Structures are given as structure tokens and as C-alpha cells.
Image (tube, rainbow, N blue to C red; front, side, top):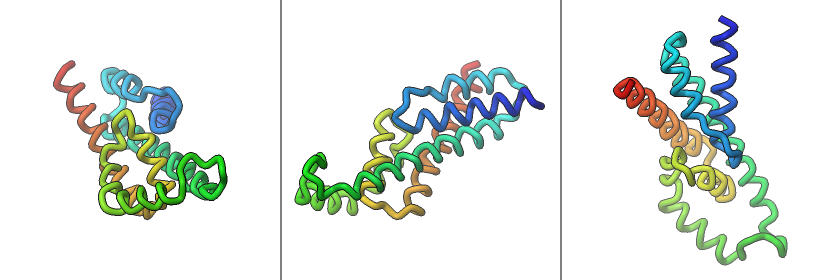
Length: 145
């Protein structure tokens, strides 16, 4: 039981870190736990998904904090560029969160914070993306090994 808890805790940390700008890789831990076979796959998917979703939530929060400094001279974009980006993001951008599982997904979740995406919409779309990704990883692993 302790072994399972420690393993799932490690998976949570790896999944959380993988969703941030940190150089973590959660799939390796996920697949290793799945192949070990002593933890139900549903628990592995749930723990990895929650960790990854919460890591994206941290990125969202960082984006919200960054946005507060948009009037500063050192801020990387002008107000005009930011207004244009917000208009584009309001039309198309929120749907890019379905790609938050991809390698550049971390940046998308930060942008969502900067653009002040509704937090419920953010977590719904990111949640769908992350859960589906781990279900697919589990299925591919089961089909391959």
C-alpha cells in the first residue's frame, strides 16, 4: 500500500512538473507504473491527469500575474499588440487549450492567464485535453506491451 502511494505521489509530481516550464516527463513514469501492473490503470490516469491539470493551473496563475505588468516599459508587447491578441484569442484562442497536452501547451496555458480566460472554461478545456491524452497513452501502452 505504501509502495503504491509513493508511486502515485511520484507520478503526481512528474505530471505536475511536466505541465509547467520545468523539464519533467510524466509519460515515462506513467508507462512504468502501468507496466508494473500492481496499481489499477484508472488510478494512474486520475492521478496523472489531476497533477497535469493543476500544473497547467499554475501556468494560468503565472499568466494572470504577468498580465498585471502590461503597462510597464519592460513588458514584452505593446498595448496595441495585446489588444489585437486578446481579440484573436477571444475568437479562436480558447480552443487552443485543447492542445495543452502538446509540447508547446505550457505556453498556451500561460497565454490563457494573460488573456484572462474564464477559469472554468480554462479548466474544462485543459481537463479534457489532459485526461484524453493519458487515456490514449494508457491504451497505446496496453496495445503495445
